[in-house]
Image (cartoon, helix red, strand yellow):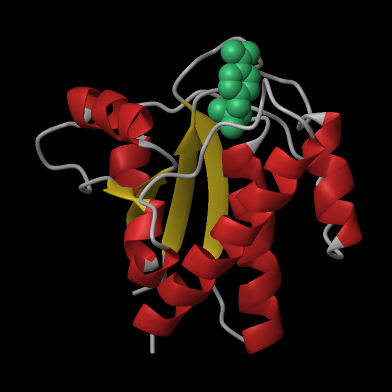
Length: 151
Ligand code: 4NP
């Protein structure tokens, strides 16, 4: 069965599109085929590209996020995807509240990286550029842990 991963954060302009880009990059490098997408629990940025700071940080690590566009998570996502990963506890609680009975169970993405020492990817939106580097560091660890579970 094909693996289809959805990452979810609040705005779908910082964390979840970054996770989408990182997992796509790592899977490609490892020769693993999977589908990956991202969405936000909120609708404020629907149709917008990722935050410029996310684009810049990802670009320095060899990823081009410029074509991504924000969308809001919907009930159908729980049927279409095999894995739904929340960036923080609030995202997870919002997903659990909207999950259809037969839908996939959402999980915290950092659950794939028990050695990371933290369980959430903090929202970098209101902070400085270092928050975006920290965000990518955490996402890279979790993406690596997730890909190892697929072997
Ligand atoms: P994200 O970050 O959830 O990682 O995309 C945010 C982006 C925008 C807002 C909050 C978080 N906002 O309030 O507009």
